[in-house]
Length: 182
Image 1 (cartoon, one colour):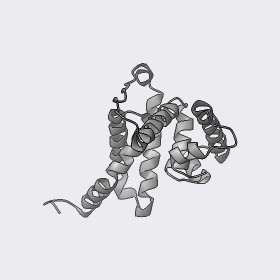
Image 2 (cartoon, helix red, strand yellow):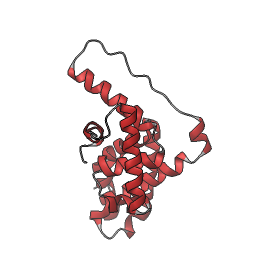
Image 3 (cartoon, helix red, strand yellow):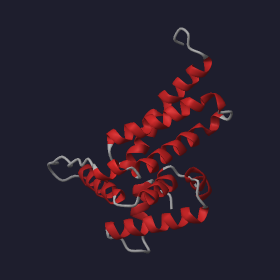
């Protein structure tokens, strides 16, 4: 423990170190831009740091950070400058066919399709399938009703199926790309 560090500071540092990369990856799935993901991650952890002493249930930290992250993202997409400026990264040229290349191409196609969804649908799909939250947990994270979660998930999956050229009765590829939960 660094000199002068309190027990709360040590606990926060340990939690931050353990969870930073996972929160950053989740932020990237939300926004599709690593720089923006860094900003969202920083905002979520700043909010956690501000309320660290008030957190009584340490088991709820992941949920608190997830809620902070989602709300920071939804707040950001409403800002005019966010809608105006979009960073676009071109995928690198990949030589030769292969299963790893095919998976990478499929993932990039899926991520591009995911970024075309409205922010709320994207967040619902991320919470439901990538974070593996149930409908009630997703509704609590977003601060909305369970019906809203269900309708946004259905619309988002339908749009992804359309964009990816899948049949309505077979959403296995879509849910697999999201994390495998149906």
